[in-house]
Length: 491
Image (cartoon, helix red, strand yellow):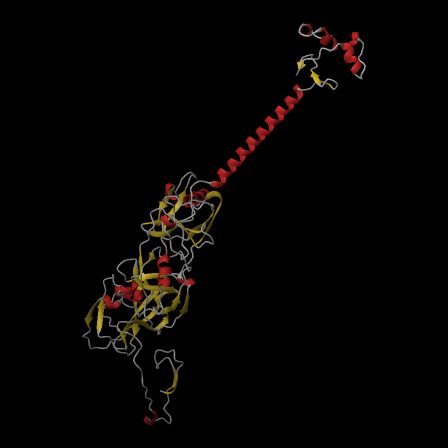
């Protein structure tokens, strides 16, 4: 070979780089030598070499800071599936493929996996005593995971509450660097899974995953962040970057079955609706959700059932890690709790969430067994710690009181007008200014008796001439019998 020219991305000189094959003017005085450095890998780490894409290539394993090919002895589709999982991919049905002989060193062991392992080094291994050379190497064909960018999971823990933190990017799972990790970071991760924060992460011993790339490091979350994607971090896609891995331990939530909480809203009376089952928070499927269901949920929070609204929306990176506990909810409207309505239980994740907005009351009294709300730090508070939640509708009660007071006032006004009109009609009469006495039109006396003066004396003192006696109306006989003649004639 002469005039060799490589770009740096090739896996071999022969057949990949460009070169001349004539030897004119060449001698061994021009032979080339190289000095290499140990591979930046740890024992047991896997990689896909000479790959046509990120998930299909020759399997190589690191040993003594050197990459080695694998023996075909006892290699099976189960081995290939474990290798894909360890690399952060999903297993593809095409099991494995054979590659041509790379000429590189062969690993001293071969493996036999059962299928329950999470990495190839956990499988049963045997010393490779074969000395003959192989005409091909072992390769695998994986496929990209259907996870979304920013999705997280906990791996290799004793239960679902703990494990090594991994994040998905471009269909492949990778590591989260543990440098500068804080309690706020752990709180955000645990809330994303529907659990509460626990400070026991430092006591866990979980192995690293060097076969997976490092995606995030220097993560910095605040108490109001709802997902790891909302936190600040540095993103890497370089597979050669190595940092301490992150181990997280959460604890079960203190909520009760059927408790509700609102997450991510601008106020305590709005947000994405979550329900608690088995001491874990989960979502409610939006299929079949109605306005009546929203009223029952707001009543359970202690809010008014008037002027409520709801929105159905696709699941986001914040809720995609949570299980779905309720679907096809159907309420009549008189229920006190959402779990009193009919619904179907569901443990799988769905594609639609529910966000509601309630009409918050001003009463700050907290009824017993009231549902939970989301605290400022994004955690779900217990039912005893929720505030401002009452069961009665104060607005309706106030409206009824105003109506009753108005009706009473109207009745009082009508009664007073009627009494006034009646009193005016019964007190009409004739007033004699000269004697300051009043006589009714029907000749009945009002006040004192008329004076005993004669009619002539009364006429003399009265400036108005009286009509002839014949024109005066005669008093009734019953009145005449009770009056003196002078009084009757004067009337």
